[in-house]
Image (cartoon, rainbow, N blue to C red; front, side, top):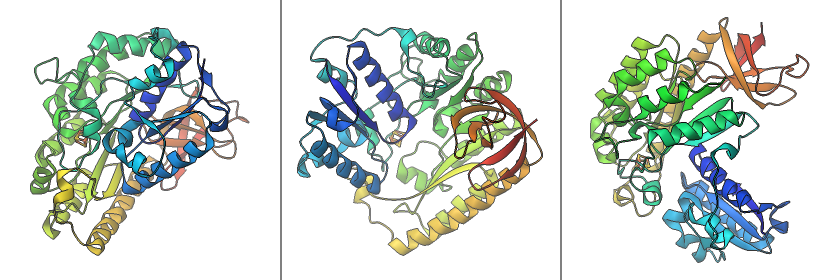
Length: 419
Ligand code: SF4
């Protein structure tokens, strides 16, 4: 039986893939090694979100290649979309799809999967990938080449996986996928099954919360009333929606081939505002897309001000090889820099105001991880991160739910005092 070393980079979806790989390996009798030097096989689960990430991935692959006496397997988004780069860099690695990694290590034996052995991170967080793939074809995206069209397992199958995670002790289920909003489009004539799935998961016996991962505005828009109602009716659900709009200009969205219009995103936000008193809107903007002119940029800024997300990711556009957007004539570096700075400043203002409004309120926080200097870190009902100081001295531990009063904040956390 093999000793394996596995490293994972990127999003929770990728971490979910690693969990599945590890589960198969352990069920096949393989076990983790004490570092790559001790491993019969080293596995690098890669990410390819930014150009800088790619360079880091290549460098890490070279280091692992050097360090491990065994095989090196690279998998994940970068491996699948740009696998040839590892070879070009002189890295001796087997480039594999996530699904093929266990098979490679298992040497042809089939793993047996039992639903009650799902691993739970920190003893608290269970990652539940509900589907792989998406229904879009964004002109700047390289991930699509790795993941393909949405492939949704039936609702019942995902509910059973969620039940297994809860039985294994998960207090927080993180529902992941490239685009959770289109879960079920492939088996339900283009209608999302996400509301039904969430409703069913929330009905599972147990004490847990559920965070829904990234859902593009298009998929959510079609079921916004139903979905907002499910959030309002089930306290297990964190009141948190990550709907990446990417631009406030319909022209740019069309060039990005994003499928949604700005108005659809706004309608989603309005619907959630109507149904939920306290919730977190998380969204992403790409700044400096090749066809973005000053008026488009101004529209993005205006949309940010109008919808006031509490969590915002601003990404400066960078070309991904093999995508259509890579062939477009890009904007100058200074233009991108200036726009990104303006947008980041606005983001800091909006997020700061959202934290400021939390001060003095009482929140129920599920503690999910150890923080620095004896603190514990968790999430409140709207999935806003809250730090509780001196956790151990107060008799608290990861997995507890604690009522706190929010006393202060910095740019990324709120601080809570147990009541
Ligand atoms: S939704 Fe767009 S960005 Fe996301 S994986 Fe699909 S094609 Fe890529």
